[in-house]
Length: 151
Image 1 (cartoon, rainbow, N blue to C red):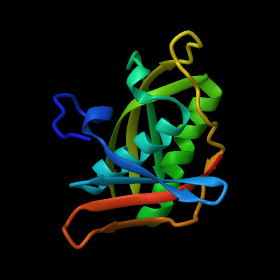
Image 2: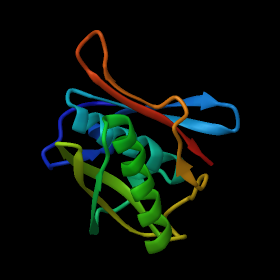
Image 3: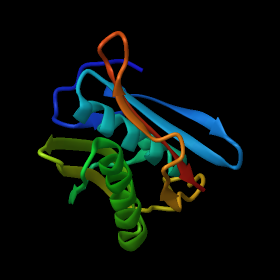
């Protein structure tokens, strides 16, 4: 992964994310210089389970907001809100932007309706869970946002 993005929000090239194994499910982990960037990267990791984000055109912007008493619960709510939007709108996403203040997340996801001719769909994500849930700073000062998603 590389860094440097002229447009707001994390795109595939700007994301630092990974998947980690967890029994029958999949862990998603995002890294960033800020908590917001880590949330954006975690969303990208989750999106990459469903479809190769490089194939997603950012044609439609969807706004998402949620509130929670702590960062960990906010991450789960954010990811579950994105799962809901993908399922109900029959869309895939390839870019994200997050702002967090006072326990409230306002975010945006850019994507498009699923196109069977261009999108090779992977695994359906059913929901973000509290398993391996963590939002914290690393000893190097970076942020990490992670959890396991049910597939």
